[in-house]
Length: 247
Image 1 (cartoon, one colour):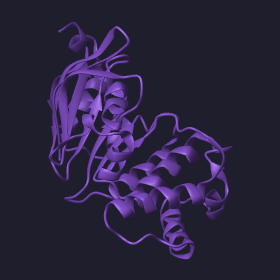
Image 2 (cartoon, helix red, strand yellow):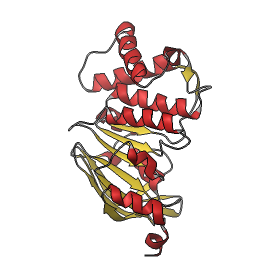
Image 3 (cartoon, rainbow, N blue to C red):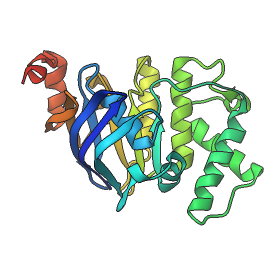
């Protein structure tokens, strides 16, 4: 599914990623934890194609293609989805129109027929109900006036509709209360299948109580320094990163 090989990246003259190596097989969910400034969000931005990040070495192979050579919209069409830590507001852009446009772009890429407004609304309402979102979310502008938890649920609604092959969740649990956290986790777990993989970036072990990862990785100093089972997350919660950073 995803194989990252010796990935180096920088912003300006500052090197952030310093040789990341990581493999996420088909059907697996991997968590990435680490201290502030370790490069976790940078990794998510580099994989999704955000401007401002320069890859100086390495590659990221997704389904046989080096995604670092693709434009961001091509990566999205290929099945890569990024859930933002801080979802942006799009004033004047209706949520339903935004979601339908994105979904139909993906469907065209897959060679599938586009959905008309009636078919889309039926699908979107069903997905929103699963995430315990009111239907009026679809009538509002994208994330405008949404609470932090509502913005994260809206990200999960996008993911449920787009059906990505690889989801990257950049600290999606940030700012969520326990009820919203469970709903977001249920949105991820509902997609679990042999054709779905995910990178879950988080500071806190509590998210991993609800999205149980196959592997937990520690990113520190711009590279993966340790990998293990969910018990590794419990160890980090108890003892922090000081020892790993020193090593």
